[in-house]
Length: 141
Image 1 (cartoon, rainbow, N blue to C red):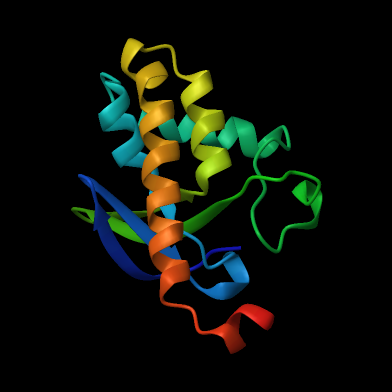
Image 2 (cartoon, rainbow, N blue to C red):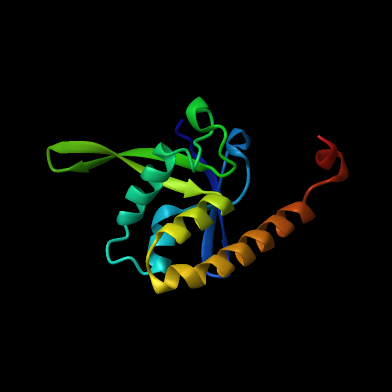
């Protein structure tokens, strides 16, 4: 299932994205941002790690039955990229907190280990900020 990102918000140097409510409606970390902060020589390598985690069921895609047993998920945003006369579809991945931590555990860089604590802190700061804007009637639904 591909989704659209509905908004983004900056938190302590991270850009967190939000997709539609059917994709969880929670803060998501962009794949290339994770890769850059983790110090990957080629940030696009993170997409192979994410794709593998999806294929093995460790990360779910909302709406895809095969991975529904996973508690962490990724939202896929597909876009067509043109290069001269040819074009191809490129998938970007936006990960929830658990999926981001799963990928950071797979990456073999010193920065990836240090980022885990930062991801938890930023995610919880963002969710606390979001909850502060929820009315009591919205909390019951």
